[in-house]
Length: 176
Image (cartoon, rainbow, N blue to C red; front, side):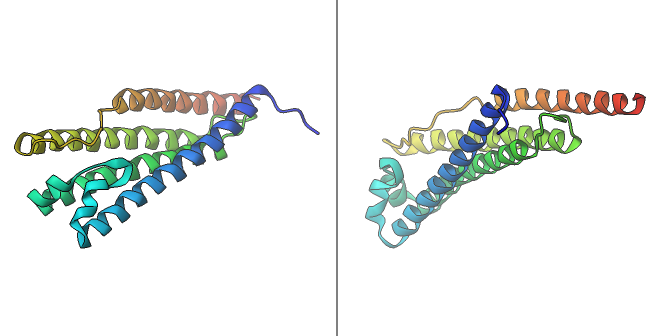
């Protein structure tokens, strides 16, 4: 029986947590989508959407605005879920004996791009909600601007470090 290092244990826990985040985000997006579907047929259902969200006033005010708001909420969740999926891919590809691979670096770069896209969509959603709330009192969904841009920058830097690690590793392989 091989003894796992502390890093291997941490990566295994992170792998499980990434899967939990992915499944949770997909379930949340699905729940909002199903709630939206029910509210199409039964407008009163918009009073108690997922997580006690009450968008009944918006639903009654303008169905198109209501649909756009729900679509933006789902878009943010799907982007977050895809990012979690990319994290799962990184954690499954990384090997501690040879951690610096171009494939991992590219996935890390893609993660930073999707975090940035998520931040943009989330910012648009918050601005849209603010715009709607000016014309419709009581519109609130409990969302707050996350620090996606900071996280995207960190992951991008890590991706660049991985790329440099790949270069150094390949140079060392050539000199041996």
